[in-house]
Structure formats: C-alpha cells, structure tokens
Length: 212
Image (cartoon, rainbow, N blue to C red):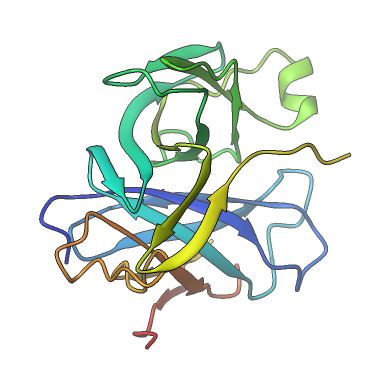
C-alpha cells in the first residue's frame, strides 16, 4: 500500500464497446479505489467489459529517474478553475486530470487547458444537449497529476513524456504494478497498472485481482 492516500487518474478505456465512455473514481484509500465507466446520457447506459489503465501518486512533488511528478486535488466545476503547482516546472508539464467523486451522477468529463510552468486550468463538461439547455453539473473533486516533459530512466529503463494533438458498476482494487518497473509497494510514491472493469449495469461490481 501507499504510505498516504494517493491521487489517482484513469486513462482511456479499451474499445470492446463502440459507445463513448468516461471513467469516474471514488473511495480512494491507501490500498485501492473504485472506478466506474459512464456512457453519455443519450446512450442506453449498458456497456461492455473494458480495461482501463491508471496512474496513482502520493500527494506532493516527487522525482523519479529524472521525471518530476506532482499530484494534487482541487474542486472542478462548469466554469474554468485554476490549479497551481507547489513550484514551477522548467517548462509546461503534461497534466492528467480525473473526476474523483459523484456529487452529481450525470456523466461528465474533465477538460484541461492553459497549462503553464506554474499553473493550469480545468473545467467539467457534460454532453452538448445538457450544456445547451443551460443545465450545470456543479462542483466535483478532481484529482490531477503533472509530469515533466522529456526523457529519463525509471528502474534503469529509458522513457519519455510529451504531448501531441489528435484529429455502472464498480471495479476496485489496490494500485499495483509500477512505473517503468517501480513497485508502489516498495517504498515508491508512484505506481500504475491496468484494471479489468466489469460490464456496465447498475448495482454490479467487481474486484481487481492482483496482476503479477
């Protein structure tokens, strides 16, 4: 387990089902968290089994193999909100953001913009029909993880981070795996892995089995 409750972000889902989905997490502890895949409200809400990747880091600033990682939480809402780093990066970092709660169960995604060396902006976005109707989502807890760009070595393996442009059921389990071979259970403040999520149907749940 982590020594402190981590910040968790979830990446894109696999493509077993063609309908778009967004991940939402909750109940994050030192040993695990819950994640749900939401379809947009215009869909039927029943989604196939998907696999998602996640990144977890203890709150604060860390350096791993030349990569600077900072993790934190903030309140996100329909209007843009500013998040600030504890100290400026040498250049604008890569920022990952994730809704971490369910104050409003309506499906929502996080938009990240205006990333600078010392701060960035996030806002919550629902499907277009909700926005056009003037319905607001309201505040949600948002987890974010910022990583410095460039190349470095993690556990002796080379890697790089950058950014480019491109044209309800719950699964829970401990953040296991590692970043470049770094094991979070081995005194490391950062870990990553993959979660096989359950088929989306109300009330169902699933548990992440240990992946070695």
